[in-house]
Length: 489
Image 1: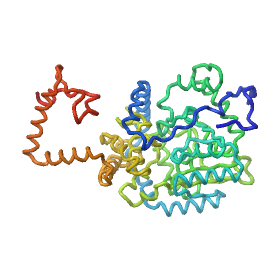
Image 2: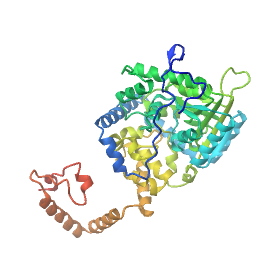
Image 3: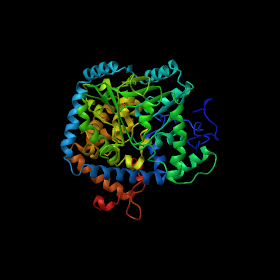
């Protein structure tokens, strides 16, 4: 981000609050996605090498799960999940019809609707709107769709200031980082890291207290809202019946972003459409309860086009960019149910893999079980297929998903697809072919297990465990022992 001519100096203030001198020009740029340049193991090691990150991720996900269970303790949770699944399944099965209905109502409300077939087109459309309307600065509310298309870097490349206004997103943007969780972007960061960042931006040491750090960010963000020409949001749902976009947030930034600037642009995946407003009575409790454990988020906003002649505020223009980017290709196929996702993050909170390695290990936008499904589906097996292996197949994600997506089955299907497309490493294919040949015959099975016990006995160390350099199983034994007593010795 760069300072515009009308931006005040550090000495100027809004409502008597000094502006942080560097808030509009952090020295860091967002990091690039790491697929396919690094492996899952390499990315995971970086997180696992930071002890606090592992503790913070596990602690935060435990807390989120507790809040979710408390939220639904006194309601028929299973019945609500059944209803949620039915609504999402019906909407996706009839997606073209409901999209057409939504577009008709949205345009009647004055919304300008665009369609982006892929990530590049989404970037070009949004940048084009900004150019046409002379937009020099945009404020952004939290949007995973904009992360998918790398929108920030595209707009910055066009000379447009981009200010993330969700506090967590603001931090990762200034750090040149990326969100580590669908709901909690800085789950993997410490307060001390945020303190160091904000002190660097302010040019002096700030109090290392949450209230002071929040106040520092608020001062600059308030100025951004008042000086931005455009606001960019995502959308949690598209209501076909009314042509509205629904946003849920716990900070006022979402409502300010969609109403204070003269142009509002919403970038929303086409799968977010639902048939009726009444469906929100089911889907909102599921989304907020599984996301944060709340009865309802602090702000629930339905936007229905630009302000009318008799309305005192709101944007002069409303644009909605409907993003496909691989979504329509899933309709009617084996993996269609992945489109049911409402982006609550609950599957991340229960996944034993995610809880150890965090979201960045998955190399793209989404982490955890849903990331292990969406990444190969949207990026292709050659680039993203490895992350579908990053699962224990324990089924905990199936048990928590608010709309009952069978993530376990989808992951198995993606593993099979990866093998069919020849993306499985050659050594792995040979090993499993040999294992299958041996263990499909009782006599060879007994002989191979006896030989394995003898080999392990040769490799055993003095303390009765197997060497951590066991050939062929190095990745397994490098982080755990294999006591021989468990092998019957």
